[in-house]
Length: 286
Image (cartoon, rainbow, N blue to C red; front, side, top):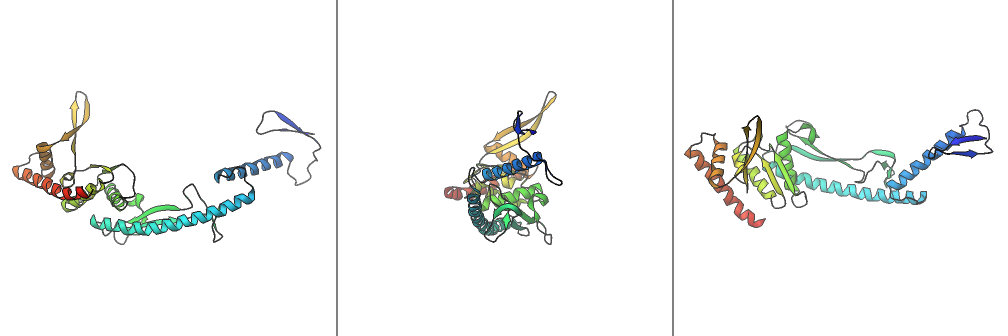
């Protein structure tokens, strides 16, 4: 007689009439452990497929159905990716980044226990399907495409995000967009284009932009100045809402420096005037 400890119960159970194992045979304990492991694996599979209690035949049928659905999802993703690449390239051209190459990479990983596809292959999957989607880019001519997140600078990431949001403006439901350092490495002409793009995004989003470029700031509906002040032994960051002439003076400071002139003030007023002239008809469209 053998006495086993139930792995799921501290109490013991008796098992009678157990044959002695021969040479090369697994012990009863090993067989029980393997049986439980197989049962646990099958249960996990059922739960993953949402089919707890279903038969193996039903699971195979469902996996085949999931494979067809996943294949259709992959085809739709590939179709959408081509359209997205076209739209993003247009946006990048508008942002004076026409030298940048952009692609959407869609790949799958084969897995024996994955979802079977109609072509006979099985692929690893999660609750979003079998595809791994990654944005690829080359920011300099002649350079190979690499994952965007690994090669782009902070400013380039912000401008890529702006291009993506412009391409997806009607479909994207994120309520608030924050752009930081979007003006790094660009001049006034590109700044004006970015200001217009950001203003257009306000049709569907609340847009917050941190910038040092007056050509961008001129398009804002609300302008805040951030500066530091020393109070006692502490340094505080202060946020000040600017209106009317205070805003003009801040734009003049951004154009020149703290010792701005009347010419700088006139240039600041012209920036605001041009931005408002552009925004008014476009605001009616929004």
